[in-house]
Image 1 (tube, rainbow, N blue to C red):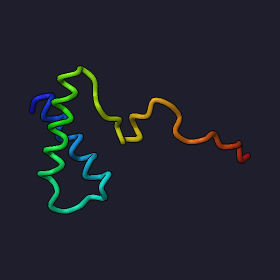
Image 2: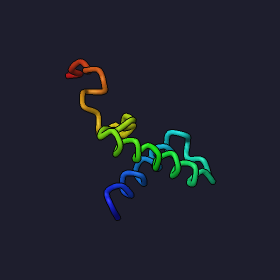
Image 3: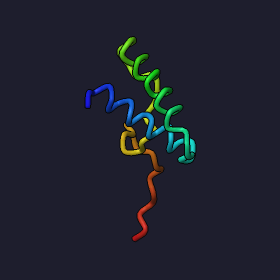
Image 4: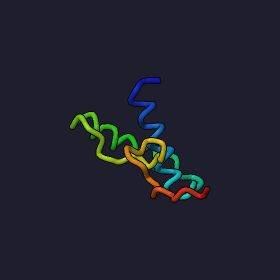
Length: 68
């Protein structure tokens, strides 16, 4: 699998998740992801933000007070 195919697959998956995991939309998600990756390659940067919380660049939750 090429890097582009991996990026398309991953992005299509996140699109599917963001829409609530609808059935029968894989072709549409793949087409959208393909266009987004093509744009990324064309301009050299991603035209989207990741929706994967593990990729957050900063603390996404407010600091909690010590419960001790």
